[in-house]
Image: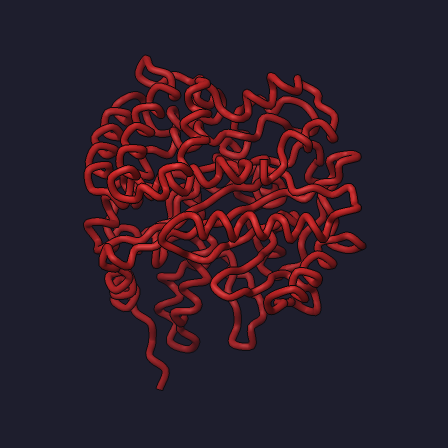
Amino acid sequence: MIHALTRDDLVSAYLSSGKPRSRWLVGAEFERHLLHRRDGMPLAYSGEPGIRWLLERLAEAKGELISEADHPVAILRQGASVTLEPGGQLELSGSAGGALEGIASEAEAFSREVGALLEGSDVAQVALGYTPYATMAQIGWVPKGRYAIMRSHLAQTGALAHDMMKGTAAVQATYDYADETDCARKVGLATRLGPLTTAMFANSPYRQGHPSGAMSFRGHIWTQTDPARTGLPSAVESFSFEAWLDYLLDVPMMFKKDREGRWLSARGQTFRGWLRDPEQPPTMSDWDLHLTSVFPEVRVKHTIEVRGADCVPLPLAMSFVSLFKGLFYCELALEGATELAERFTTHGDRQQRFAVACAEGLEGQVGGRSLAAWAEDLLDLADAALQRCAPEDRGWLRPLVAQVETGHSPARDLLEALGPEPSPGDLIAHTQICG
C-alpha cells in the first residue's frame, strides 16, 4: 500500500534537513543570456548555433541529455546540471562545496566550454539582469511542458510575468542550516536584507535599447509577476517550518504531473487540497515539484536559497556567494548582521525599501542614509567573518567591496559608460559573463 503523504511528513522533511556545522556546504546557480552581438536578440532554440544545438554539443562532452517530446531541455552532470529558463536563458546549477574556489572554477570552466562552442559565431554569454533589446514578442518559448502551463497561468496574475519568464537572469546561492532556529535566523536575515541585496547587484538598466527606468528592472518585474508566490511573504519574515509550510500548502499550484509523467494544469488547486484526495494523493516528488513553482526572494527547500541578485559578471557573482557564506556561517557575523538588518527595517515598509532599491540601486536612501552606506557596514561584517571563519574565501568578496565603494550599482556603471542608447556590440562587450 502506498503511504498517503501528510502535513506531518512535510514538517518532518524540514526537520530532518538540518546538518551539523561540519557538513555545511554552499551551492550556486549562474544564469546568463545568450545574445547576438549584431542586434542583441536572444539565441533561438532551433538552428546552428541554437539552444538545442548547444545542449547537444555540451552533452556530448559531458553529461546526460534530458529531453521532453524529443526536445533537449537540460543536461545532468555529476553534482551539477545545465537547464534552460523559458526564453532560452542558460543556467549552470553547480556542485555544492565547502571552499568557494571549487564553485568558481566550475563556473569559469563551464563559461569557457560554452564560449568555445560559440566561437566563430556572433553569440555571446551576457551578464545582465534583463534582456536589453528584445521585446517579449521577439523571444520564443523553450519547449518545456511546465513553461506552457506557467505561461498561461502567470498571464493572469501579473503584467510583467512573461518578462520575468523570458527576459530575466539572476544569480542564486544555497546554504545549509543546523535546525529550525538556525534556519529561522538565516531566513529572517536574508529577507530583511533583500533590498540591500537587490541594490548591490542591480544590473538591468536597459529595456528595448533604452533606459529601463530602474537600476534593477529585474527586481521591479518580480513585483508585477504573481503576488501569491513572489516577494517577501510573512512566512519568511517571521519564519518557522510550520508557518513556511502552511504558506506553501496554500499557494495555488500551477502544474503537476500525472503518474505517466505528463504535465497537467493544476487549475488553481492547492497542495493542501491535494493532500485530501483519496484517489490519487500526492507524493514527496510532487511536493518537491511544487516547491519549484514558488519564487519568494528567499526560498527554503532542503537548503536556504537566497535569490535577490541580478545576473552579474562572474567575479561579482562570486561576491554574492561569499557574502552570505560569511554572514550565515560565522556566528558573530550572523549576530551583527541581524542587528544591522533590524535597524535597517525600522525605516519605511518593506515594499518601499524594495522599490527604492530597484529604482535607484545603491544611490537610494533609506533612513537618511544611502544604501551604499548600509552596504558598507554589512560588508565590514562579512569581511571580518570570512577572515575569522573562512580566510581562503575572503578574496571573493573584493569585487563587491570595490563596487560598493563607488557608491553606485553596476547598472550605473553601464549607463555612465555607454549612455542611454548603447549599440548591441558595445553593451555586450561590457557585460561578458566572465567580466
